[in-house]
Image (tube, rainbow, N blue to C red):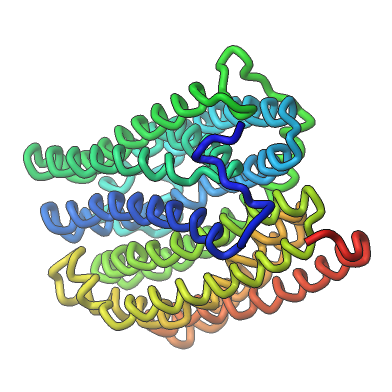
Length: 453
């Protein structure tokens, strides 16, 4: 019997259901970033621009290190959605317990990696000597929360597979309030600086982890979690890897290109680093908004493809493109128009704001390209195709940025020119991913012909 949190992705009108799925996920992600932005705002306003630069200098590196494992969670989402749609309860349960077991293992592994290699990696990025000690401290405390972060990520992927994006929203709201309260207490009252915001982040990750785990333990369906049944079912894990590892590698390598960009920004000094941190935080809100539509596309595609509703699946893709363009157009336009006002929330330093706006102006106006670049691989993953989109994303995004940074940037050393690499790489990747999508759809059409809508 279907509960009120499950969403029927196989029948009925598409656009309202896409919005019903994507909107809570979008709000969840925006809330999560708002609460994360409190970290940046708190240290920027109450500790200084050096602390702001220290927190920001770790962002690309942290994302690069954890993206492989968070990308693998997309494999959990696709496989769980497939088993849920086809009512394969035993396989669904095995997928849940395999995913949770793997989340625990990977979270503990990442905690050790982050703590041990924080300083060497930050040194490799040419992190400014004025902020590196703060950066190392922040990163080491942050990675203590990796087991909680991974558990939440994989459990939330399971809930998304059944169409439930509402309860993760509630969990993030509760944990985010804790994060904000601890930030204000530890930084403003106890003057703990970057260590205070890191401790607040770990505490909020622990709370959201506890809430989502309790949710799955109390579930009545095939996705119920029982810790006594935790076991790696290798056949399911290999399928998760086949779908998720390419996505994780893609995210890791793309973030490696962001690390290279961060290293280039670091050469401009603390003001530029702080401006990049602030602009990145604003752009983060744009990305999670468009990514919520991509997540909806992947889940809807996986369920409909698994029961061979190919015509409906293609209509889903068209509706997702429309939704992506609307979201990216509106939010990108607002970020462009009100860029300086938004950056002023993070810092009052005029030089930092100007550096940040230079970056924001170039990227926000062209963000519709990023939205399509994010959507196409999600549609392909939902159809079980993950390796080729990964390859095209790496070639298009990372290849373009490496050429830009090492061949073009040395002749035009300005932040404006450096960040034109973003829209340039998005455009190249979109063209490659679109070619891949057309080929895959033509293969599916030949294989299944006219399938029920």
